[in-house]
Length: 110
Length: 122
Image (cartoon, rainbow over all chains, first blue to last red; front, side, top):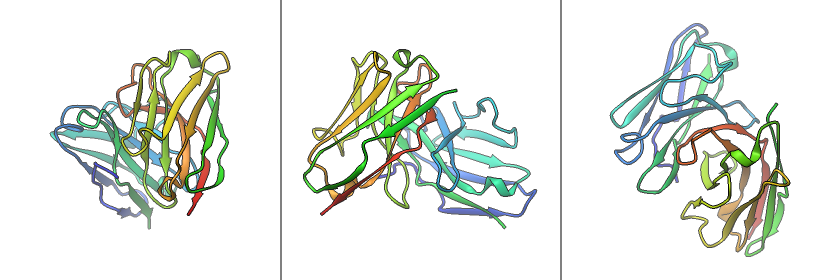
């Protein structure tokens, strides 16, 4: 059962900017870092953003993360066909004493 | 290059048991917390368990407490998940993942295996 809520889908044309939101509560996003994962079709998830807005080595700067209160966002600028994937947010939950994931957003490049 | 290779998945009847293994290479396994995350077919991600680098600290989701046990053998660079009393709702791809350094109590998993499918028939 997912504790973090995301819109099920988002789309854009090549070159556009797409934003994905992740809504949580005080016990998770409100008091801990947010992480974002990209899951390409048929593959394992990959860490895309850590500590709210940091990119691991090799992740293009087209991907950016932000957090405000109990919500977080992932933005993809200059959308490309290879960005078609499922995107999940995650954060530690102090009440559950474990990490929780978002419901996931499927990004489609039109 | 970090590599995580899961094995042990398969078809099992409801109430049965299965042990998953995850063989790690390319990093200092004994210094890294490790986790199991599962994904039911066509659905989202669900955290299962996390074990500290030494094995002395374990966190597990309520949905698997009392049924699943995570363990590790640092001499063999291997992570395990013993799954007992399996239910149909445990059907999922099970991923082994490496926690980010200092990230035992976070949602930070910087490397993932390709996963192994566990199917529980009712």
